[in-house]
Image 1 (cartoon, one colour):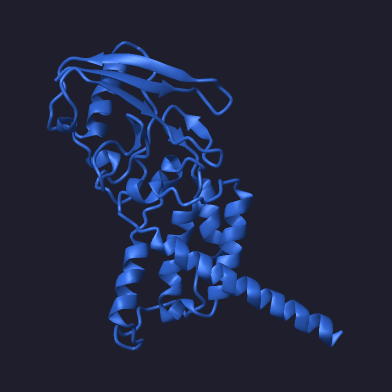
Image 2 (cartoon, one colour; image 1 turned 90 degrees about the horizontal axis):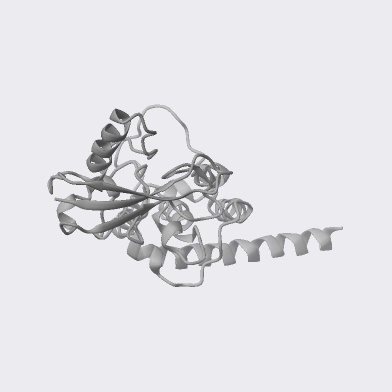
Length: 258
């Protein structure tokens, strides 16, 4: 295969950056997209040029590190697939392929296709925990969990934190990510003690990171490589409303007590 790559090159967050064109003449259709970039980088290094910076780890669709926008779509044209699992046979011979990093205020560019997704970590740190005894694993049947709740919790927990939802959203919203992280704990008995406090803290952290608002475009759901439903955003909104009412009630009771 012959392809023409247009890759975003940017030295650091303060650099202006821009697209650079590279032509590749012997691309195997069986290569993954990242393997194709590996070959490009080998060619660039052989010429004494700076290789393209991009993230990767597992290359099995598990870690979410291979975050990049390919031809205007997060992770590329194949649904329910990360960039590392996207193969070159999905493109046409001679095709122009445009590759760029996530575009969001909360994800500053580190270099080329690498962005800082530390904002996600800080959202999880704000409330993504449960107050249970640490140590050895409990007996599997010691806490009964209804099958529908367990299935929904697993659906939410499948989020790999890649940021495709943010990249696809016209507003740069992180509501699907936050909803998944809040909901998978809220659906289980172990997550109940902090349920109301968790949703408040994690949404506050999301707002501090300057993510955009959710206006129900639904692009996040379409771009998610794990197919996480926006129904979890509805669950998040319900819990947030309930927790806000609880806070108002506690505030009123405190005023009355004084």
